[in-house]
Length: 463
Image (tube, rainbow, N blue to C red; front, side):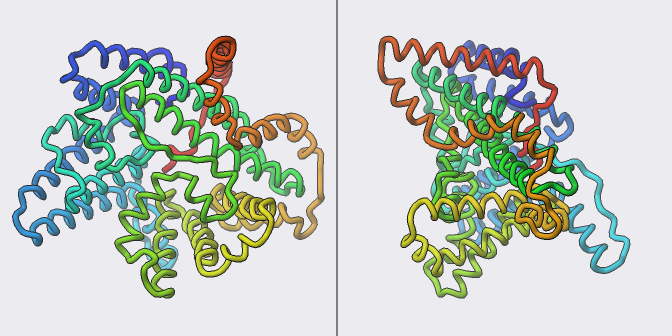
């Protein structure tokens, strides 16, 4: 079940909200946990048992760690819990990749397990680890209430696609949240903004991105059109889904962390990663990069730390070597910026800083989009006119004529448009009425597109 579906918008969300606010306050976590499990079981009826196992296992690990009297005992619980969580993620997500790689390297018939990837396992596994580590460090107490912990790990607004919520940031909200009317209304507006990004922008841009995948020998212009379409698609797809998640969370009284902060206005790769998928970056920083030594170390160790983090960041995104290459790509760029390039960038005009960043980002999404490494380099050759590649062809003319306006709108909404609208929302009178009408029109338009559309993908369900 995806947020941008008619069933979710008109059935599941209203029913879950009604049930949540009708039950007594002390029963709301249980109500939310049950609805979250139904939400997950809707798409993964078998793997809901895996989710329940993760809840039970990590809840028990947290209680055991709190009761352990010696540092050695606490470390033992930490090691077992983290290894179990990573082992579960490794088996379901990476066992096939490693088996195929071992077979290719050794020539031996290494059997690859045929298991489906549980939706959202990369997200809730990292949240489980954050809970265990936070309890071990003393940043948060172990959760004594099983239902409260189950609500944290299974909460459906962020269950399948984030944002990744660290337990220490969520602990107080599990018991002390007090939903308000203003918060609920803000949640509705945020949900509608996410629907706009997902349905009216990302899904339309996907039409170009998917078609360019199969062009075979694109012209330079059609290759760039496809790369730009995917660049905007993946942003509005993921950021839109996150907006919907944050909005739903506020409807239920939760303040979920932000995940995107206008990444396409960045002037360096470093700034881009401070604005893109911020909860993932924060997780790797706090639970891997800093424990490795961070940047308070010698240059060789710093380079090692950044390389480890970015290889694992790439691998986190998918069980394919193109994701590792994508992580290494950004790792090399960020190491260069850290060592010398950033100082040089600050000396050139802001326009060229932005151009440099967007060029690197667009190329990175080509690495991300194609699992076949040879296809990556063939596409890049097409983008940069290497070989017998025409500048423009009929395909490029058709797609630019059909979707040029959508690309332009996507570029505009990559800027701080929503922040400008939010400043207007504090006004009263005609401006407030006009904005309310705009939100109603936005909802009706998104609904009309969903009724008429059979194509409603979500890229990050792969991860």
